[in-house]
Length: 216
Image (cartoon, rainbow, N blue to C red; front, side, top):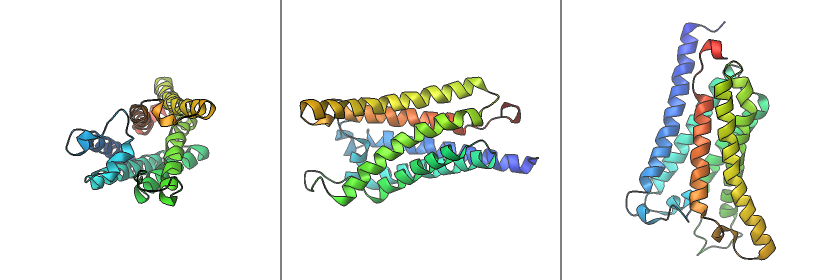
């Protein structure tokens, strides 16, 4: 039996995790409206572009907050036995991927080679993180909300929508491979990535939101 203090602790950690996600997202949005990062195109430039600016520390803080908030919330689900092992592993990939993104910033491709180790690692970590999170939500939804079909359905829809955003990127890569050209010019990459990131954070927030005992 879970004691009242234990439930309160879990509730506090879950809410703190969700707050960290919200603050991290808000900081990224802030970067889009304050100079000099307000000049970065939200339509064409990726979110990691903020890491090349004078506000790099704000971007790094935002990503770290999201990583820590994710880890805290997922740890609560795990302690409540509402997070299957595959979902826990996928959630770990998401969290570690975010930290790698901070540790290995996106390079300025105008000055470095495409084979740059740090840049390659940054790209791999980004792909792994963005794919792992919606898969984690899909796998965890049933176990997290066995008694709440509505929340389970919402989490799954958001996870599928997140993968849909990623499918747009994959489609551009395939078209570019067949017809030639640069895949990132075929779509509004910045807009697609921001849409994917926002959808994934909302999906994660739905998954981490505390559930009443009778909903589990």
